[in-house]
Each structure stands twice: as structure tokens, then as C-alpha cells.
Image 1 (cartoon, rainbow, N blue to C red):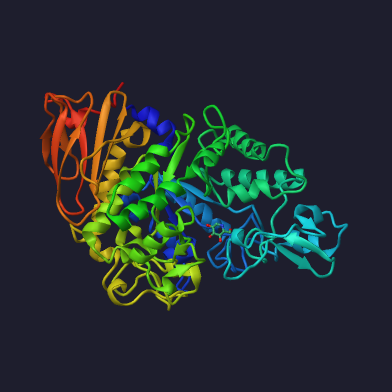
Image 2 (tube, rainbow, N blue to C red):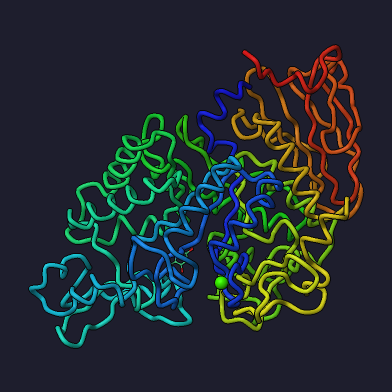
Length: 553
Ligand code: NOJ
Ligand code: CA
């Protein structure tokens, strides 16, 4: 594939690294991470090979939802630094070739936002209609409540006015009303402001809620997303919208818009993510394989974003009750590991019992699945969780840089895990010196992933495989093929595959130095270790594998 093409649509094979400035690195020794600390770690991130940083909310906030409750969309939480620190960070990231996107949380504000304070001050206030009010809200379905441990309704009575306001999430997060053109204008200004400061786009929080719960209803709620996309394209053609859209595939597809993609550039694939966990729980390829087969193709310039864990609970809401229970039994059997009746508040390594081979296989799977991989800070070193912390905060612990912690010279604001996941056992410094570490494995996977643009761009096919624990898929683009196989079980597997069109080709394992030849009957035998994986580039016997993905034309 031509690099001129892949870099033009850079997001299609980006490696996105999500981090919270607050938990990454403290630069002024007050126990709270900040932009100065993060800026000092830019070389670490560039060295890891990630290409795009996603910053979780860094705006002023009363912090009742870890920053997803904003009181000013145009400045920086003073605990994290100043706008000056932010610009210095952006400049340094750009210098190392890293793009930056940020959370766009405009479904709601904090109830402490000046707009909401104005809005609730009287029914005649010009800001009243910036939020969604009702005298007699429709009764709501308790099953739809997002945080059932804290809330039991979407509506909260504002005692002074006797009206109810809508809050799709916590009651301290009143929903903004994008049915109001002034609100839509203001959101556009927010995008424009941060793009002017160098952001390459946004991770859009809670997209379906944002466009649906408005008053009056928009004639077509998707028009608003299309308007945002058009605005961004006018200002900066290569900027992206990466949407949090946890809905079934056919519905998710509508969020990309038409043609080459007129709405969201990327959507997180919550379906494949949940089925991947079911596959891991069963050591069976089928749940994930069927998700990949069902997954619709996004419009030409768009892309699915793949992830295994993020900053929220590992939601399993799209599995059946029985399937969810299987994942709970395998990876979070005790009630304090579970949350909201639908998810797990754990990180990946603890769920996989600390089994390094299995953990490495899971990440090999993540990077090789068609789509853009998104990782959550600390995944590259196998950070654990702190179940003592409240709710989803369990996974939002400080980054572990060194045996003594290395996050801050002061006592960190948030606790680090103990035992097998304590900083003495899990940290960047030690893993940098260990060739077999998870960190080195991530670097290798990222390097290979970037060398195999076919994985992201290609026509994907899930292959028939004679072994239930093995997922085999291939991606073809511009006459080049990458084949990937993963053994989800803890016993070795010998598999045989038919590779259409690849008779007499050579398969070079890009993770080891093994080579396999495809017979004239298009069949190949591949041995796999327990939890083994292979990324195989196909080439004609006389073509070096490095030249099989044509880069120069
Ligand atoms: C989704 C975010 O990922 C989550 O952390 C947050 O609590 C809700 N949206 C509300 O903003
Ligand atoms: Ca600090």
C-alpha cells in the first residue's frame, strides 16, 4: 500500500492512546498529574509507537464524574496546568509527530456550569432553553438508566421552578439541548477553539444521547453530526470525530453518515469488543468470528475503532444474560469486581489471571483485528486495578513509571495497587530493560501493525478453521495479503488453512522468524503454541516480504 495514501487518511491505521492528564505524570509534585508532567513523557509515547493521543477531559470541573462534568469548555482545569502548559504540550507532541484528540463532552454540562446556573435561575432566562425541561416527564424505563447504582430516573425536579430537567447520566449532569440552534452554534465554537490550538479531532462522548434527547426534536438528529463534520472539514480536512456509539451494528452504521462518511469518522466497535471477551472466556473463536462477519463495512473513508478495555466499566450489555454470566464467571466472579449489573471494573491483565502468554495473545489480537486499535494508558505495561477505589475509578489509577511509583514525588492523589500489581512489580523502567516484557511486546506489535496497513485498510475475511480455539483472518489490499492466526486456548494447536489465491506463496511470520510455504492446493499447515499468535505476510517466493506491500508507487 502507498504510504502517501495511508497517511492522508491517517486515522484508518492510527494507534490511539487514551490517557488522563490527571493520572499520567505529576510535573509539580503536588500528587496530581498535569500537562507539564505529560509533556516530559512525550518521548516515551513516541517511542512506544502510538500515533495519536486521546486526552480524557481536562477542563475545569467539580469532578463528580472524573471530569466528564464540565464547568468551562474553553479552559484548563487549574489542577492540571494552564492554557500555556497545554499549548507547550501540543507543540512538543507535534514535534514528535503525535496527533492529539480530546474528549468532547457536550451531551451535558456540570450543574455548576454558569449556563445551567443561569438556566435554572428563572423560566425566562435566555439560557433556560439550553437545557431540556418538562412539566410532566414521560415515565422512564429503569433498565435504561446508565448509572443504576446512583440514579433511578433521567429526570430531576428543579424545586424552584417546579419543572424537571433531563439528565441522561448523573443528576448533576443536565443534558444540553442541541434542539436549540444557539447550543449547536456554541458546540461548533468549542470545536473551532480547540482545533485552532492544534487538536486533530475529538472523541465524542455519548453520541446517541447527544442527538436524541432534545427539544424540539430535530427533523433528522443526524443532520447535527453532519453539520459538525462539515464545519471541521472546512477548518481542517484531516480532523476526525471518534464516536462513543454503543448500539447494534446496523444502527451504528448510520452514525458514519453516507458516501465517504459525512458524520463520525470512526465509531468504537462495542460489539466485537464484547464478543472478544466472550471468546476469551470460552477459549473459542466463534463469538468474535461471528461479530467480525456481521460487522458492516463503514463508508470508504471511515473506520471502526477496536479496543479491549477503556476507562469505563468493561460493559457486557450487548451479550445475552447467559453470555454475560460466562464472562463474569471467568473474569470477575466476585461482586466487587462487577458493576451496574452489566460490567466489570477491572483491567485486562488481572482478568486474564496475570498469565503473560495469554495477555500477549489478547493484545496481538487487538492490534491485528481490522480497525484502528485504541489502548488505555498503562495497558502496555499490564497495569492492574485498585478495587478499593469507588466504582469505575478502580481502573483509573496512576501510571507506574518506576519501582517506587514514579508518578509523583508527593503522595499520589489516587492509590496504586498492591501485591502482584504494585509498582515494584509492574513499571515502565523495569520493562524497558526486559526484552520479554509486555512493553516490548507492545512496541513490536505497534511496529508491525504500522508495517501492515492491509490490516486496517484491507478487505477482511474470517477464514474457516478446523480448530474451534483458533481465529484466523486475512486482510487483502492492493494485491498484498496479511494473514493472522490466534490460538485462544492454553494447549498447542496445529491448524490447516486454505488460502485462496496464495498457492506457492511464502508466509513470513512477522513476530518470529518462521517461514511457511503454501502448497499448490492453496493449503498450509501452521503450528501454534498455547495462546500463540502469528502474523504472516504473504509474498511470492522471489519477493522479499518487506517488498510485498508496495509502498513506492
Ligand atoms: C461516557 C464516558 O466514557 C463516561 O466516563 C462518562 O461517565 C459518561 N459518558 C458521561 O459523560
Ligand atoms: Ca501536579
